[in-house]
Amino acid sequence: MIKLENISIKLDNFRTKFTVEINEGEWIGIIGQSGAGKSTFLNLIAGFAQPEVGSLLINNIEMRNLPASKRSISSLFQDNNLFPHLSVYQNIAIAIKPNLKLHDNEKKKIFEIIEYLNLSSKIHSSIGTLSGGERQRVALGRVMSSDKKILLLDEPFSQLDPNLRIEMLELLKKIREKKNITIIMAIHTPAEAIDFVSRFLLIKKGEILRELEPQDYSIDLY
Image 1 (spheres, one colour):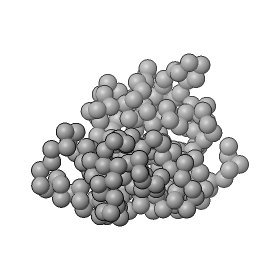
Image 2: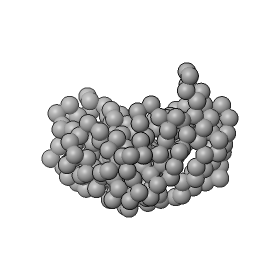
Image 3: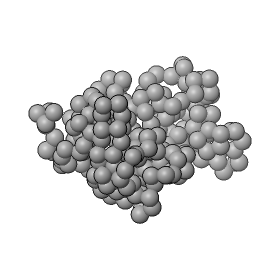
């Protein structure tokens, strides 16, 4: 379980205060207008931003003073965090061993992930030669190679066309079920996610204004 209680941080003239509980295995959609605080919410959980006051518990362990590198959390943002000079194989493998010196069982795991993602024909291709959808699959492959049970996504599919966004959501659904992970995802097009998320959190002016069942989503809430 992830529990935020009065987590507050001031950024320039903008202050946030978040209180919410997220159960293990949930898929949470974070919605709200641009500048509402969606990315800040994710950064606080990930450890990329440090709150001034409040409590952040993950499985009843206080996270506030724990650096991002020590948290069992994977993050995926719009730029994919991929290395353009490395191949598909290397980009996924680097999540397991930064020096890319993998044992045979680790190599087997990478090959299985690449096959699962239908990227076998691109295994030695550099990232710069891939389509947008293929790059997103590589980024999700790095998530699959990790044993971390919490995945944060900040509008990672917003630059894809609608059909590809749905394809990525379907793939994310399969990964969630396969690895039993908790997903917290800022969504640019929430109407496309109503068949996937457990619930929406509507953020406005740095606070969680409402919690919504997927079917209750309406653009009028903005």
